[in-house]
Each structure stands twice: as structure tokens, then as C-alpha cells.
Length: 163
Ligand SMILES: [Zn+2]
Image (cartoon, rainbow, N blue to C red; front, side, top):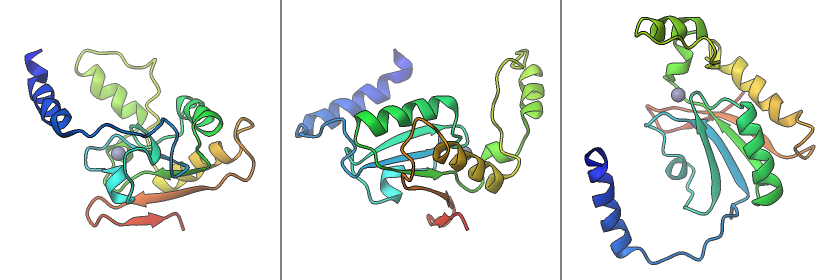
């Protein structure tokens, strides 16, 4: 547990002044954001959101995987989501290697990852268009639901809509 002592100590302080919450699990602003796990991204902060406002789905590269689609279906039909922002970012590690590169890197460390698909991003715009299409063409999601892609610039804080 020592490895997590800092977190439980911080939480004790957080809870000490926590005022409770009337929020439900529904997305108050009707929004889902698909973004990367990159530690430089503060999805709520950069979008002017508060806890309770949006569903935040994160993975390596902000990819619309089968699990993201599954989660969006639940978010839309059960949790109040009516619009989706897919938000990859500049300087993403996922754009700097291929799946084959990653398999080699892990293999060099004694792990065979070839049964995993990493969904690396050789071309960020192409990947974003592909991922937006996965959402807009899904038979499980409402036709015409607003879906947008935009790239977050980790150096400037600006969000740049897909051109
Ligand atoms: Zn990233």
C-alpha cells in the first residue's frame, strides 16, 4: 500500500472539505469526450467543464475502439449523452511509432505483445476521420447525433477543430 500512500493522504484532505454532491451519473451538459490518456490533458479544465458535466473516455491515442463504441452506446441511451467530441492531441506518443515498432520494443523487454492491437496513429488526421466515421456510421448510435473532432495542442492549450 505504500506506493499509494500519497493518494490516500490527498483524498483524506479532499474528503475533509467535500460538500457532498447532488450530481447524478448523467452527463449534465450532454457531452462525451473521447481523448488520450496523455497526462498533460485536463479535459474538464480545457473545455470549461465541471464534474458531472460530461463522460470522459480515455485511452492511448483517443481511438474509437470497440470498447469506446460500447461505452458511447451506454452513455447515449442511459446517461444523457447527446454529442461527442473526439479529441486527440499534438505530440502524441501514438503518432511516433507503428504497431510493429511497439511489438519490437516490448519484445526487446521480453514480452510478446503480438496478440494485442495498439491502434497506433501513423497519420493523425486520417485516424481522426476514421474514428469519427466509426461513430457516425455506427448502427447502434443515433443518426445525426452531433460528432466533432478536434486536436488539443499541448503547447498552447488551444483546441483546433478538424479542418
Ligand atoms: Zn496521446
